[in-house]
Amino acid sequence: MSMLLHLDASARRTSFSRTLSRAYADAWLAANPGAGYVHRDLAADPVPHIGEAWTELCDHVLENEITDIARYEEAVLTPARREAWAIVKPLLDEVVAADVVLIGTPMYNFSIPSSLKAWIDQITFPKMSLKGRSFVVTGARGGAYGPGTPREPYDHEERYLRDFFKGHFAVEDVTFVHAELVNARIDPALRHLRDKHEESLATALETVSSLGSETRS
Ligand SMILES: Cc1cc2nc3c(=O)[nH]c(=O)nc-3n(C[C@H](O)[C@H](O)[C@H](O)COP(=O)(O)O)c2cc1C
Image 1 (tube, rainbow, N blue to C red):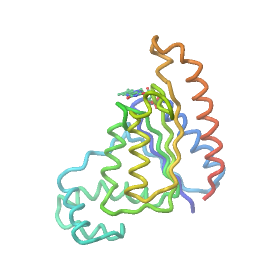
Image 2 (cartoon, helix red, strand yellow):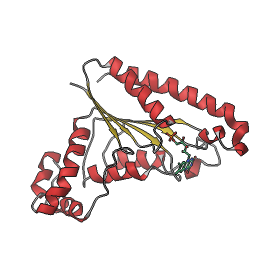
Image 3 (cartoon, rainbow, N blue to C red):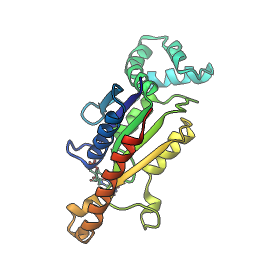
């Protein structure tokens, strides 16, 4: 059975990144009847930051050259590590079972929300491969960071996620769709960019719906 893991990280309940991820998920589920689906709201139900016992799990995996995710449990040797593992295991099981990992995320301070970073920190172990999965990121940002824009070099959201998924997880199939210039809706200084924002949003919505319906696992 194919499986979609859907994460959302916006602090807003009604949000553009959530609208886009929802549209992708609806299209994907319609195209993959009977598929598995898990939705995790990282803002409403935050994943805790890693603690010291988590680092012990990580060190054990590294020191013992464990690369098979199914063997991570061998590192659970103390009560503190058991507690840490109880948080990691369900998160890891979800991502390992997924064919597609869908992430709805805002840009916060040129990067990703700490809620999403906390999830990444919990599920990431040394030399861990998630090869073969597709990652789809639906984003929203107040400004514009596309190729050739003055803000392009400040986009540490897409660049970070792309580099991390490829560089650490060996995932090549990563797609980003952003709704840009969202602040034109509220910032009087950006009011003249409202049409560009509407255009960006409409294109992003169309793109995620067609991407979702194309993705058959
Ligand atoms: C804490 C915070 C930080 C933000 N930082 C940026 C930023 O660095 N660059 C940007 O273009 N927009 C920034 N924004 C604007 C958001 O990216 C924008 O509101 C976007 O729509 C949020 O996504 P959402 O609609 O899914 O919540 C920030 C918003 C918040 C609340």
